[in-house]
Each structure stands twice: as structure tokens, then as C-alpha cells.
Image (cartoon, rainbow, N blue to C red):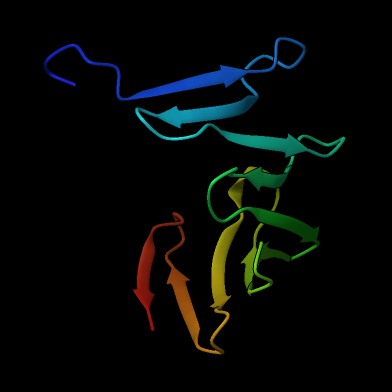
Length: 109
């Protein structure tokens, strides 16, 4: 922060440069991350709160929290250019998003 106090720290995997394996806000427990063989996050682990599991399919990612609530992100695009076009929330509600030709968010319902 402006006073020189560290507010967040990061841990990286030395075998995979740039791959964050953990982070911590000052005074909070360290969040840890696990990855699959392709480098995608499969788990976000919080020892004192909600943890999340990620399951990947061609055009969707299913996120399940530790109590079992599930959200599904439907995507379009390829590689690093995928965009979330629909999100199904645990309560059954849905958000849809539209993008322009440059990939910028144009609308959301």
C-alpha cells in the first residue's frame, strides 16, 4: 500500500515459470492452486473458507464450490480468446453476454 505495507504476496512454481501456486492477502490464509497437465487450474483451495474445483469441456467450464454449489460458464472462441457468453448460477439464474467483432463486451442480460 502507500505506506509500504505488503498487502498481498504470491508463490510461483519454479518448474513452470509464471504459474502461480498460491497467494495471500495480509492477515489471511494462503490460497493454493492445483493444475492439470495442460496448465489449467483444477482447484482453488482455501483452508479457512470456500474452495473451488474446475472441470473443463470444449465450450464450458463447470465450477463447483466446497458445499457443492455449481456454476457453469459457457464459452465461445478458441485458446486464450475464449469469452463467456452465458453463465448459469447455482440458484438457476442465467446471465448472457454479447461481444463485438473486437471481443469487447457489448451487452449483458
